[in-house]
Image 1 (spheres, rainbow over the protein chains, first blue to last red):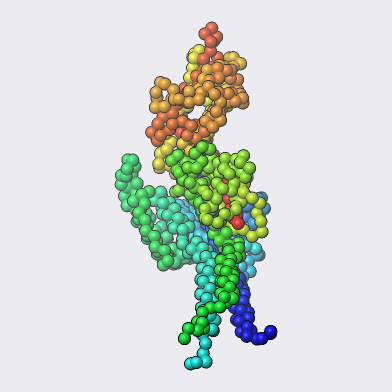
Image 2 (image 1 turned 90 degrees about the vertical axis):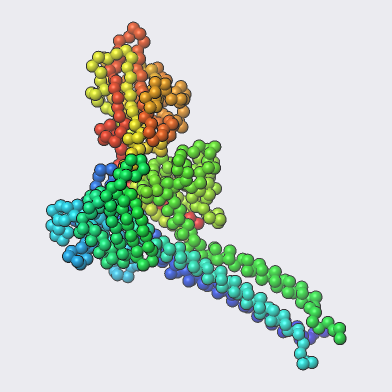
Length: 166
Length: 125
Length: 343
């Protein structure tokens, strides 16, 4: 009692099964789509951290005090700026030290132009291929004799920091 | 049309079902991809830190100059914002007015527009 | 013409049912499958970011009175746990809030239960997230709540500053030595709340007895002794708005949730009637006194010697608990780092 009338149905069943497997495979394989999303997430984390660090450096510890950031920029203390920034940036609760690096540029207005000077140069870990993020902070400088390039007048300058992970 | 029978109709039905199932799966895949993109981009694109920073800077100006903000400092902020942050920024500080509680504060108007986010605020500082 | 060509056969019906059931199961499994795959990189990071924002930029809810002052019986009224001093001061955290927030454990020994209380009040969302939140303060303690981190979790790190409570340390101050000592003498520490809560002072630097501890320490009490090895402290009382009657308070019992009082380093009640040799230390917990923005609170230390004894202390006068740096020490904001891991 063997005949071949049911074969078509079996083949349809196999086809349907294959389609479902294919669908499931496509669904799972689309997780690779998330890779760009993942880099966005790391960027977001770094940018938030950078903004936090600059904001905290710009917060005086006492009511009448002057913030670290203002002092560093006003007195062109690049070493102090770099050390404090990296200290804050790389601190973790577990005591381990993160491996973030930075460079900083200051933008100021001269005439009608926006000019810049390199405040903290990048260290050796910078190759140009890193996916660095940018964090900025305004600094208000009082009128004071400080010489070029920021000369003496009261001014607002923008500190721009590039942060990348080793 | 005598030779035709209708026994194959269920195949058409199956095809329809599979199509519907795939449509739903595609919808799910599509949405889950969006979750990752929008979360990070939402955070990156909304200039919360920039606006906060700008406010602090303007308040620093008010602390230093009162309602006669130095024209050069204001120009610094406007010009550098446009050049480095791609944001149109404007602000004005009015003379102090008395607000509830008997305090005298400056009404500060802040305008910020970076093409994606527009932010306007009148704050008493 | 009543053939059965258009009807479905029974075995087809059975096969079709099985197929449909299988399809439904597969379809319903797929989204769950995706959650497992996507969320490690994406959803968890988003939740960690959100949790970080709530903790660092939000003072929590309710605000008046602040959530960290709720006792265990009113714990359910806490809706959101934020650590910021106020909503205008992002990234500046209040030490009192930090202590309360990290007072949680899985075995029920802490104030909050991990993970339920943390899921409901800081992580949010329908998915039962698990977290590890830790914080370390420069030169201070490291706090942690939650489980050990597995492989693959959402993460955010925030850099903050921490505001610690103020204290008045009174040491060798001639202003408080009476020229003519008397047998019964009073020394007052005054908190003028309308001055302390002045809105022109940023919440980041404000002395706010409603949300922060107040402490008074008379170090080196022997400086005020009147050629005697000790003086007798009768009691300490609180007065509001210059009233003669004292405020209702558990003066005669030790109650750590309201105050802490030490004579020469030994805990005692506010009605000690005991000898003082070297130090007096009083710490009032936040909101232990009924304080409103206009009240004036006097903390009165009364020294009294039994009738035939000579006056044993010269201390007297009024010490203002205010923004004058010589009267009250306000600690600098200290650097801290907060990490949130969610999975």
